[in-house]
Length: 433
Ligand code: ATP
Image (cartoon, rainbow, N blue to C red; front, side, top):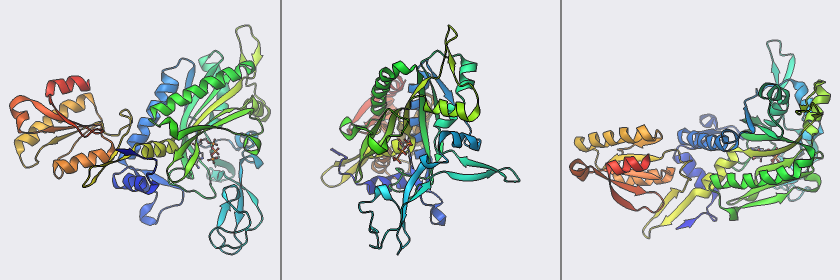
């Protein structure tokens, strides 16, 4: 059985489409660059990842507060944060011959067009924010937010005033972000509309190194929840020009995407008090924390930041497995059970035997009571159904046959080993519980 280092991304993209995980955005009109749609199984996988994240980083902790801020914000937010200025641009170059545009820092040669060999023009700073107009008069400028983080900073005071948290504490948010990427590419890796899962963790300045280290470990715990193998994840210290001017330390967590190599999955940044200070200056409000003695401080910030779509892409590529059976190859997604979109599939052995179908339905209803993400399938033959469930990563298949009618036992098949065991229905229900 082999997984996946040499798996080509094409196989994953093709499976994702064939099995209803991910479709090209606006496909029937020829698509739209940098936009992808999540199909029935994709949205469930994505929701399962979000839920696991929220549980681990918000619900299971006493020092974390959730937030869902608006995507459209007052334009002054983006002036204060530096996004309207030079801080949020990518270097754009255009070929003078074929007029194709590139991100200069992604090119091997900054002289020649990689497509046609033509001469590349002068580098320009291209701002990545999508601008929009608000209101019937359209005279208020706004932007689709390019990150969720600023929604957290502008609500810092609201959370402090309403929840009375003790420092250190964090605010977490999951939501859409938009960037007019110069060259969206590589499936879900670089899109123009994507989802982020971000935390701003507020600390006393002196404690930043301690909490930076704590969050570094927690990110590894999260990598385990995603089922990513540690050999395919590495930490990279961001240095030099890549390090934001306000950040004293940033680590990128990179995943080894097949056919692409290591690239950023998540980031961990110590952002000093830069963001709150900027909004204090921009808004004139006192964004401070007051301790029990009445001493005030502007907290410093540790920011763990996660790309949800990149997580989906990493989970799909990591779990894609080909099992060589000699005469053919069994393809399956070895998804962590918590993340699998369908947990249990129930089949009648044959679909043209009403008594089997009725019994299978009955078993299915029982199973569904315990595990809502279950599925009934009587299409095609049992072999084909197993293959279909393998490809969507269903951990267990339950088959109802003639013996079930006699002795209330079923066949339980394990996705990863392909092994089948005979098990009493009551034991199955107890086990699923
Ligand atoms: P990159 O260097 O790859 O452009 P970034 O450093 O600008 O990314 P951040 O601003 O740190 O990214 O964003 C936080 C997270 O959001 C990233 O770790 C990544 O997972 C995700 N992300 C950023 N841009 C995109 C995008 N265009 N498409 C999908 N996910 C993205």
